[in-house]
Length: 165
Image 1 (cartoon, rainbow, N blue to C red):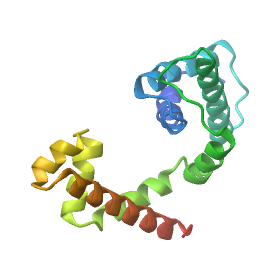
Image 2: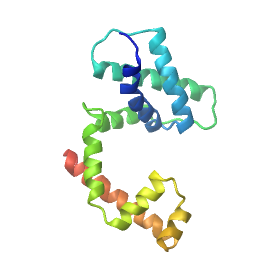
Image 3: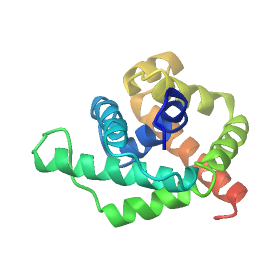
Image 4: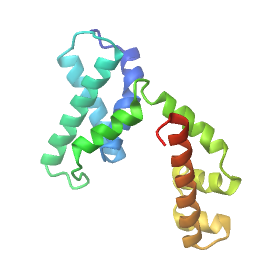
């Protein structure tokens, strides 16, 4: 298998999301994504299709994260890897999570404007709950409630759309 820019572009987002899913902080995930593709450059695998390559890349990423955890990097904590892998498989399915993302986009459109604004401010823009509370002119506890309700609505809607609920 030839490792080229197109292959990296195609798979790097999935590897990064998987590492974040496993609990790696953003900077650690970015470092490990680079290492994953260096491993692939050093030890190319036989081309058996995108799904097989994705599984191989996730396995390398998982092993590199384990090694980083064993090196006692303080920002990394252990997780139940079997449970995480099962959850990832359910999330990614056979379409690298494209169906999940489409369902999420649809469900976001169904939220109330206030809920969507709070989610975007907190999770897209990275605003603190305190900043969101000031913007919405509510107490921090009110922001927590809005976010909790919005996430519950999204979860239920996505599960319904994917047939999991």
